[in-house]
Length: 279
View 1 (cartoon, rainbow, N blue to C red):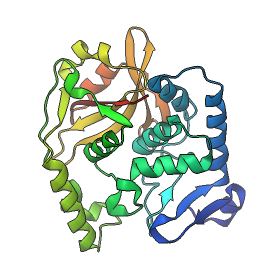
View 2 (view 1 turned 60 degrees about the horizontal axis):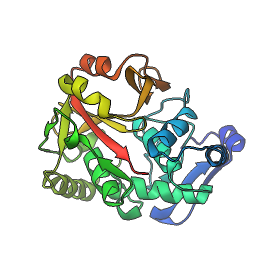
View 3 (view 1 turned 180 degrees about the horizontal axis):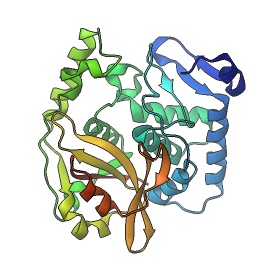
View 4 (view 1 turned 90 degrees about the horizontal axis):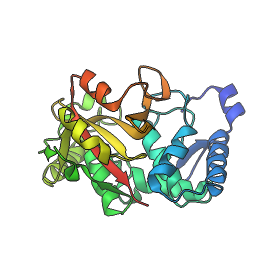
């Protein structure tokens, strides 16, 4: 969190709670949450995917900022003002749940982001394979990739975090955390239940992708699963694209081209996961 006094005074920064269970947010964040929830009360749609799109639109043009969750000690960070691809998806999904207050939202987010809701760095669901699995067990999402025509098995060999601790501020100088992440990686790799849709096969499968599905961009980078998340969006009946926090545009946008065109331009992307929010 920034510590400039004028910024804190303007936005009313809050951080409360003891140790690992603390919560960080600003008054602007809580007001934005209530604004979105109030809008959803007047929405007629009961479809989970359509709610995702409705909520995602509130975030358009908000700045892209990486690493907003990082800090010591680990806290549950609510930040609607600055988003990366993962925090955008988590924020939209948590707001799309049946919540009616800011306190409800924070509990929804805590369950989405952390294993069994334990706010600790090593319990944060850093790998999307782990995030997808844990939130699938909770009934919030379903990995539908294997149901798509053209999907293929995807054996995982996650190792990036434990083998590159220097890339993570919370892991540098903390060998005990690195050891914990190595155990997490081994547990995820052992599941062997994953599939992916090769980007060359999207054409035959895209008609089965719905508004609001979460798209994970599967990478060729050794030791990682995905490097980007987005929300599927049918801009027209003929054009499937997505809403995402774009590092190149530096803000949340509707991708201007099709999903297929985007995928074919990404050399390090093998294909996608499709994760469906449950109603």
